[in-house]
Length: 143
Ligand SMILES: NC(=O)c1ccc[n+]([C@@H]2O[C@H](COP(=O)([O-])OP(=O)(O)OC[C@H]3O[C@@H](n4cnc5c(N)ncnc54)[C@H](O)[C@@H]3O)[C@@H](O)[C@H]2O)c1
Image (cartoon, rainbow, N blue to C red; front, top):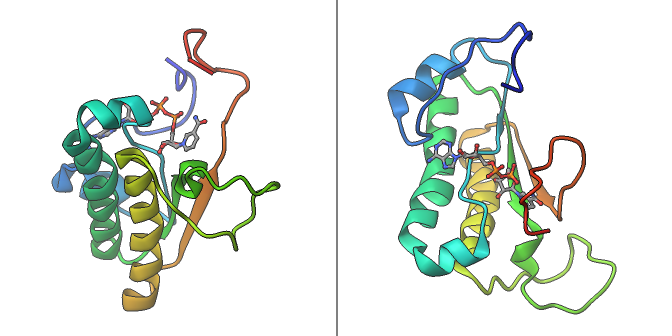
């Protein structure tokens, strides 16, 4: 519903569906990869599901980007990669120490982007999001 009225082609499906990614990425200049199971508690209940959606999903996105000729890939990591490091303010030179399966999937996302840049020359930009809030946020969101 958020896309009503916009001039977009909408493809709905699983980020692990390679054929769907090929259709969606065809001719794209850039890919903004936000799909994930974004919950620490959920990753504690079902670590494999988080790994498949977040880590394997990112790998699928990167492989599809390679097949598509190398669009810029932007992806969402998470401040959870810092674990319980008390240092404030946080900055990117701090050591990472993921403490949940979810955090591991997000550090993996960053690492895969970096690896695809160094291995295949893919232009990438991983972002390490903190708690995102604002218009459109779900009223039942725990934060
Ligand atoms: N919201 C935050 O504060 C925050 C903080 C840090 C990182 N992030 C990251 O930002 C991204 C977006 O988070 P959000 O808060 O908008 O979460 P969200 O749950 O609102 O959006 C995630 C979307 O991914 C989709 N998705 C889940 N599994 C999928 C799969 N296998 N294939 C295709 N789509 C799938 C869901 O249907 C959902 O629409 C995520 O990668 C999350 O890890 C968010």
